[in-house]
Length: 287
Image (cartoon, rainbow, N blue to C red):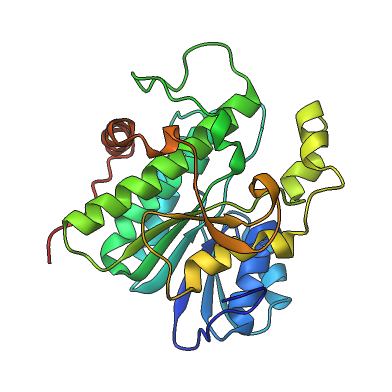
């Protein structure tokens, strides 16, 4: 797979969360063009339906609010089988808030929601799970006691923490799948610096820097996600990102994430805490 080309997806079903805009929409559009059936899992069904109308191919809109674990369970209950699950949806640098289940918004929407969704679906995912993170994970810190609420709230560190959690989860999932002898892959990805809707809305200094002239288009930003989801040679437990300077832009390739994101002990603690918080235990049993 090079540039914007990737394998024929006819006969495959892909779930893309947050597929109504930005990177998720671009991924759904490309997958639809390639012949996949795309399940657009979105919080706002009306916006998703409008987006689906602009996509060529077989699309289906289903409601999913990752902030609400009851919505996650309802969505998962309606899925019979899927080739690829793309955990793309998330929030970025939002003011302090909590989910209906009482979690800080970033950790709730960006990590715990996808964690629960993946756990509920893992026995029905035939090929791979793709978890979308961010280059800003390098700024993330997760306390040894995994207390996500301690200290003064700052939205960018909260976002970075949730993106670090994405990497820790993706790599730990692959370790558990491999230990069980399961063929399903878990792949992490990040888009580099892409001009997404969330970045355009942010008026902070950090947001203005991120939305600067060097940001690539959402269509380019979606390429690593598409590569991770479709390339036959991708290895589980790796990260796909842009090949440009500091992984900010360019075409997809396997890249290295931070040392902290590969902390096995921290990943195991995060996994156990996530199971306790969500009430979801993964059915990753040996074949």
